[in-house]
Length: 242
Length: 242
Image (cartoon, rainbow over all chains, first blue to last red; front, side, top):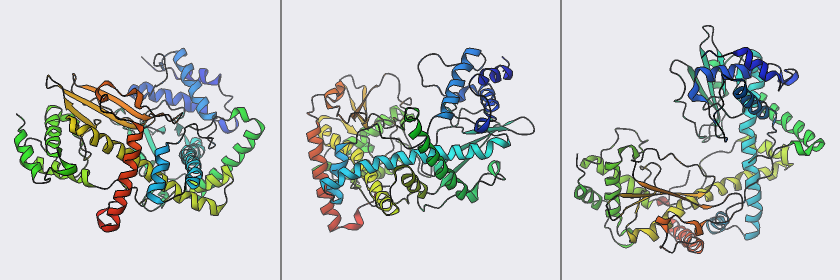
């Protein structure tokens, strides 16, 4: 079956006016679906119901909803929704000699630190999207593309793909589902053993866009402060991180 | 090829005197290798060099070394070997309003909390091994069996297998490599959303051994205090957690 890109564009246009910070997202969504048409095993679908098809209007509706919801959700670190394991606190007291009162504080701060880690991982993708989208890279946001974070086409219309991690010890999802012949390059931002960053080792596909640590740091600062303001104005709009 | 259990026992006997807290470990190692002979795809091998064969003396040597080293290594929470991501600290300051000085402290305590979490996960397996080994369960320690933590045989000599997690949100490794027909039961200790424990929902294979939270808590307390004493006597012997 041939992929109908204009149908994907039409569906996406119901979800976005494609202006401002969303400029280019309708095109990005359509191309991500085109990529999935070429690499059907790359579709990751954990929600209930049938796996949506990129060849039907109803399937594209479901994917567009996920895509734009993923784009618009807040990645501000939120209040933890999990309850700490009491035996972990016990282990901290026994192993490191912390007092009961201290582990109560640590338990909360540890959860906030995990929220902040998730936030940084999410903002790394947002930063790259902001810098790469104007150059024809499409962000696979919304969580339905397996093992690939950004795609684009080369001059021969072949797919190029990027997989991004915040640290060298973050787990890589297997990318075996990608069609052979697709160039996939991987990159991580920081070395866990040294704390050093890895911007000087960008893979060739990511070079030439002036990506760097200072730019990322500025992005994180500005994202968090503007999202905090937005959440004060409209608290119900902010989805907490898991 | 037929698996030669007596060869595995002979090899393992070079590594353990099979007494005291190691009583039954030689048998356990031999049975784990027998399980791998029946389920070759369950062997997980990330080290360099060829994948060891459970059918050869040299292969069994390599596995026995891993098995007993895994058993004897310390799971005391150690000093972190990773360096925190500075942008995570920045995000904590920006999102939660912590001062620079506070995030410096949190960064360290967060790492110790992660060490303690790893420790609790490891001690859960050690506790279960202690309670289950006398009843013919074999612990798959040493990190070379994929997706299975404990095995035993039923009366028809079929394999029974357990997969254990500390929390319901810990990642499960896929167990698709297990031969069809093998009964595999999964269990997690705690509910991340409520903090409640799950001992009252042990799968049938784990019932009847008087496993419970108080027993686990006592085990954690006693393990950490005796390992701390041991590490004071012989500091070089303690391997830090990752």
